[in-house]
Amino acid sequence: MTRKIFQVVNVNSLQRFKEDTVVTPEVLKEKGLIENARGLVKILGTGELKKPLTIKAHRFSKSALEKVKTSGGKTELINV
Image 1 (cartoon, rainbow, N blue to C red):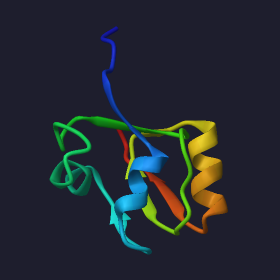
Image 2: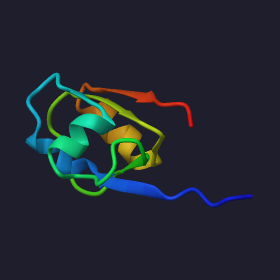
Image 3: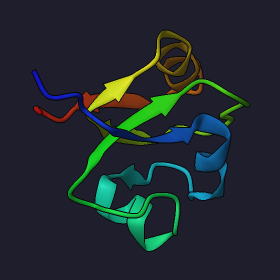
């Protein structure tokens, strides 16, 4: 079994996006938050998120899911 390597992004890094932005791996790459838009992305719950965003990633930590939901945003899992 091969180990999957995730590029991690903390929710506080997503504060830079405008309200209601759809955040995809391509958008994260454009902003320099990850190196490879084709790679796997995991969102972690470090920090705060104070605006509703729609975030598309391959994995979310439990705390990240909570913070996105609390901010009025949505999460969408990308199939691996």
